[in-house]
Image (cartoon, rainbow, N blue to C red; front, side, top):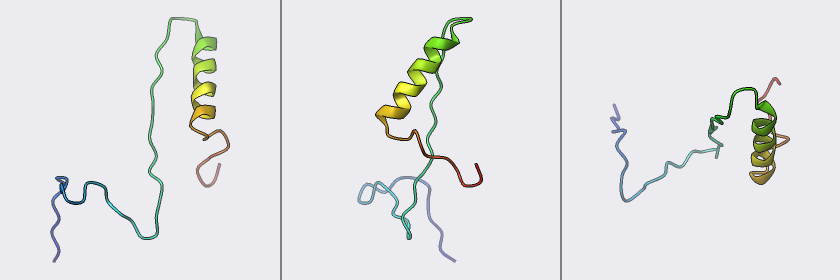
Length: 60
């Protein structure tokens, strides 16, 4: 049985998966009350900046 610690290994700081896969990340935007338009504009700008506008999970 192979036991692996979840602590990072300084010699190999990032895991390597075969086949390579992307890991989802999240972000939370917080704004003023009734100012959803500003949050929407900021969210769209972030999607464009990180080039994820057209990415969706399978099934969506």
